[in-house]
Length: 274
Image (tube, rainbow, N blue to C red; front, side, top):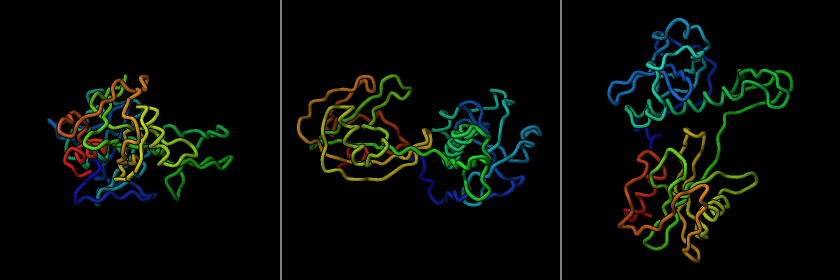
């Protein structure tokens, strides 16, 4: 999965520290990042390499990969399109640790942009000096980074796996049933509800597999394997999905994401590990 960095360690505790010239900078404009592309290789700017106008803007410490520190900058709308790489294009580039850094940084960038003003009183929010949070100086409201819990569900019936395709989304490959947790709902109930809503089938014997920080959509995915309970007749939620199909293990298509929890779980089932 895309967050698997091998020997590299991701450090995300908050530090209120100043940038150094050789620190890496993540700057976003629209749905793109300031970067250099050389074939499939991705390179990011350092503080020292930034144009003067960008270097003068405040830089926020984001996280570190081993000893390499990453800071968030502000484009001010000044970047030319040829200096930017669309965020979606970065997902298949190398090295993987920079792909991960760009994705995590963009999630933080979206949150900072969305929390400029207090949602309770409308005052301008300030950065906390002690934690990664935005604080209202007038009413005291504290806003933390956005993380949305969601489920990925591999529903199987003996030697068959239920695969779906989204409707009206850029992602056209096969996927597992997925959906977001609702207020006051356990994550297990989210699994049952989402499968029933999207496909019309019931499930039993839920088994948690693992989680993935899917920062592309500010989500924390929790993967479950579960068994069909009762009828296998599919009733499609056609405003959400274009297709839902039972595939025998030997016929499961390889047309799925290679960097996601979904893809890993599909391959586990194909290879009899689930």
